[in-house]
Length: 324
Image (cartoon, rainbow, N blue to C red; front, side):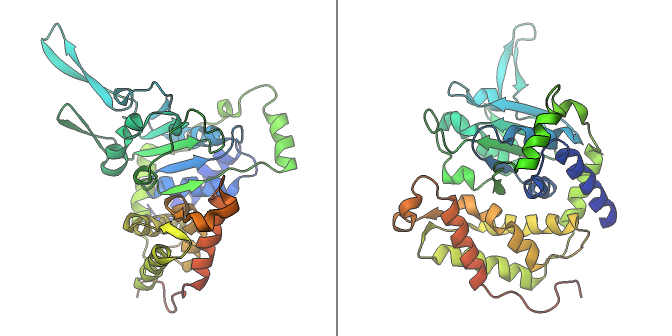
C-alpha cells in the first residue's frame, strides 16, 4: 500500500473514532499507532472517561473479528483461551476456542481478574498463539489486545505484574474532557449511543496492508542509537528501580515507524520517538521509594517527569534520517 493511501486511511479511522470520542486527538492517534505497529494497548484512567468507548470505537472502525472479555475475579483462564470438551458422539476431545480468538480483543478492567487468569494472556500477547492440553493453536493476524483498567479503585483488584505490563506496547490515559467536549457529549448521547452511528471504514485486508507498509518505514542507525540511549539511560537513572527492557526499545522503534507512516513519511524522525516515548516506556518503569515520595498514590506524573528529563539529556542524532 502506498504511504499516501495509508495516511489517508489512517485519517479516516481517526475521524471515525473521534466522532465518538470528543477532544482526545492524541489518545486516538496513539491507539491507532499501536494498532498499525501490531502492538497491544493499555488504557488506564478513572471510571467514566471513555476507556471502553475508545476501544470499541477503534474496533468498530475496522472490518475484522472483535471480542470483548469482562474481567472479573471469577473469570477462568479457559474462558480466555478456550477449553477441550469431550464429544460423546465422536468419542474424542474437541477444542472450543475462547474469547481471545479474534483480531481485536477488548479486555475490560483487566486488573479485576486473578493473576492466574491474567497470565493466560501472556503467551497470546507475545507469541500470538495459545497452548491448551499440550496442543498449540495460532491466533488470527492481526491480533491486538486493547485492555482497560482503573488505577483508583483498587479494592478487589490484582495489579498487573511487570512481565505482563511489558507486553503492552503503550499505555495511555484519557483524562477528563474540556468544557466544550463535555457539552458536545451531552447533546450527542442524549438519545442514542454514538457507537450505533459508526461502522467500518477499513477492511481487514486493508489493515494488514497498512501494517505491512508501516513495517517498511526506514529507521536510520542514528534513530536506533537514540532509542537505545534513552532505554539504557532509564536503566541507570537514580530515580528508577526498574528501567526499560530491550523489548521496550524494540517496540519504541516499531511504534515510531507506524507514527511516521501515519504522517505520510517513509522514514522516522527523532520527533516520532519523542512523541511516543512516555506512552511506550512509562508503564514499564518502576520508581524508587525515595523518588516516589508524595507521589505514592500515583507514580505516573513522576515517571513522565523522569522520562522527559532523560530525553532532554540524550543527544539527538545529527545527519540524514532518510534512506541514502
